[in-house]
Length: 386
Image (cartoon, rainbow, N blue to C red; front, side, top):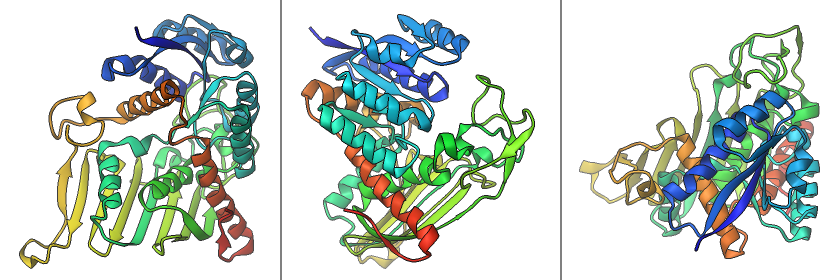
């Protein structure tokens, strides 16, 4: 008989809702998963949102106190989708209570908080997970397989970017993401964390960086508490934006590859362009989340009559795809990646082994972001701490 584990979710905005739906889908999409999730309790400081989440998603109870989740003896996993400013306190409490922890990126307001969070979980001996969902796209996993097999030869170039224009409207609300005291880093933490994790997955560790930053929209209207998302437009009186809208970096990988990262939350045109291009001595791959079910691949076959990129489509032969549909080019979506993510976390708990991406992975990302942040002040290349 399949065993179950109690889930407690803290923060019932968009992301908390996505996580909750994902747990519900795991037994449907991955019927061989050895651990069945049970939605025990959801928490949000806005009572109406907590109650509505309980009703819609099927939690057994709801609360406005996040500590009720941590202290509940029926909860085995504490799932944190609260603002960055609360991550450290929540993780430390959950780790002390012996609960396994899933925390959305960037896991804290700053690289220093991320490293403290990783240490707390490691010392407590609990298993951890991080919301780096883009890595679970079937074609991304396939690209990683090709690189590990040496299909592209020695890697020489990597370009990563995340252009998400969710804040491009100057009247977009001043959610917690735009306030340094709550979010910490801006686009560097919110978007560059994804870019860096993907680069680690595809191209490997990073040795040195030099970065740049800018804030293009210096003030925004204040939001109504508990209403809308960070995509909402219009609100109360305007207040200052206190972190960066844009960040970029040149990077040197430990394997000798050279690269560049660029992220922006106020860009026009691009909507959710989480993308990478990787080149090796024998080929190249490029992928873009806006067309996540397609990937372009070039292999140097020596035949100049067929010299160029070929487009391939996600299908059941690629990792994870067959759990959602049996046909090629039948598209998966964002929520499906979160289901795959939840499945792998539950599987790591069932096996009693730390999987990836856990807090050690996000700590590696944090060290890169810290080096980029240092370079803003030094205006020179900075080494990534070991």
